[in-house]
Image (cartoon, rainbow, N blue to C red; front, side, top):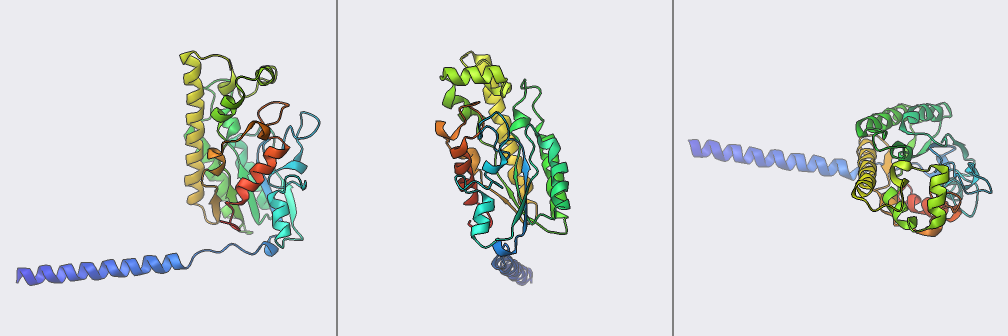
Length: 282
């Protein structure tokens, strides 16, 4: 009797497992498809000076025409231009990014995108949360996550139900390593007081300075993980899969005005790198 009961239970478990597997496969087969580019008529960009394309014009200011996201420069071939070439001929863009912005500004920028009825929103945020005067002043990872979560929740609840693309944060350690031996770069970092948490005392190899830089990069890594996880939990959000974070950018990708922001060619590299990870390509 007991052996028959055990057999029945085993068969029931197998049947339940098969039903669960069938349901899982069925759900996976109904994959979400992004709307055709021709259906996107409003686009918004959120973030900081990177998305404002700072340092790509003749002065130390923002130059949004060269933005990897919403720029109109054919030299960059932004997401905006790629969408338009793919059929979004009536696409209107709004660059809500603000130079110097940290993640605390992201919810407000997201609300602006909702007001603009954006159907595609790009986000690049986090460098200013790590680039502070001291390591202690960096944004805590939990706070960064909460700020990003609030912004994505606002976007997801929008009546426009936008497609969202989140780019990872570039490696600040890579940026330092690339130009730490450059007299011009060290001079610019000092005069402009650029990202002192990472770039202060650039010639120093003391354990304290090496450890400080490692701590900054560790925080950036944590921010990127938070971006990945929060995006994954949000409907219609696509993360770049750490493409920007893992990209080994070269000197020509950086502006020689501050040796920190992307150059014009760096913006083009960023546009191409991220576009390959969007809803319309990958």
